[in-house]
Length: 83
Image (tube, rainbow, N blue to C red; front, side, top):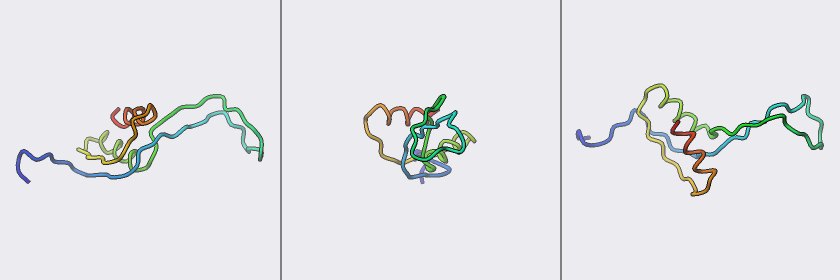
């Protein structure tokens, strides 16, 4: 590797997606019933993407390879990844 080549501490390859986390669901959940959550949040999903994000937050130089569509959900996932 020459000095002009990019250098990474780790390379991660995997999927990127979003997780929808629901709050305020009763426990235990009754079967076959429609339930309403009191709130929800959207966060980064996929263990590969979360690993890449967390290693970067710890100061490592991370290369992350994945495929993403051009829709709003993909853009949101990429925004979460780079925060």
